[in-house]
Image 1 (cartoon, rainbow, N blue to C red):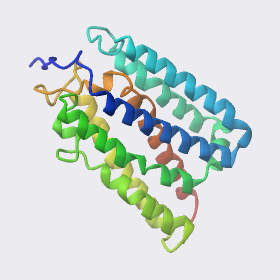
Image 2 (image 1 turned 135 degrees about the vertical axis):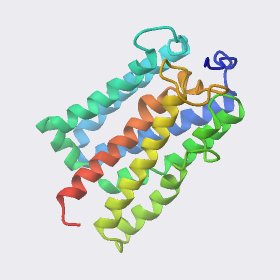
Image 3 (image 1 turned 60 degrees about the vertical axis):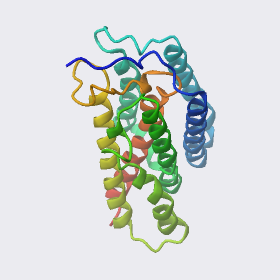
Length: 238
């Protein structure tokens, strides 16, 4: 079955794009705050590196790089793989693990609150035929629950510690599964050779500026935060 590409080259409303730029900025700021609290000297080079990556993704997306579908490998993978490889490198190297083990878990947990706003933008993209319904909270995407519970879990784990580390570990596992669920559905709904879902309204929104920052930056940051938290919590007594 061939996907319906009617809306592939139609831009979403400007207000949705502006909203997502704000979400990306909040994600960047929250992550830099975590880096600054653990390794102040690294905050500036990390900021520079992330800005370069965001700029590269933004420029490519604005030139319709990712909406060109007849390439091997698919161009979307070029936006997804670099951050995943970088995250893997951090956990595999001694210096990377020192960096990971110094990050404040409270800040990384609070950072998950941006997932609420991401879900609202995804719903807006669905209304404007840019993503399928299954990528929203009316479909198969329950990731908004992680965003809504993040400040509660963070507050009672760190600011007023009444929850045990075991509960924080369980929450991270559940939130990670919610993230993997939407990522899987998003990839399998995109107009790629291995598309499985939503041929009538495929996931074309994330191929455009600034929404390419969702798979290329926001999701990797949230994923990284869960990996850091689970590593640290698994090393402590639950």
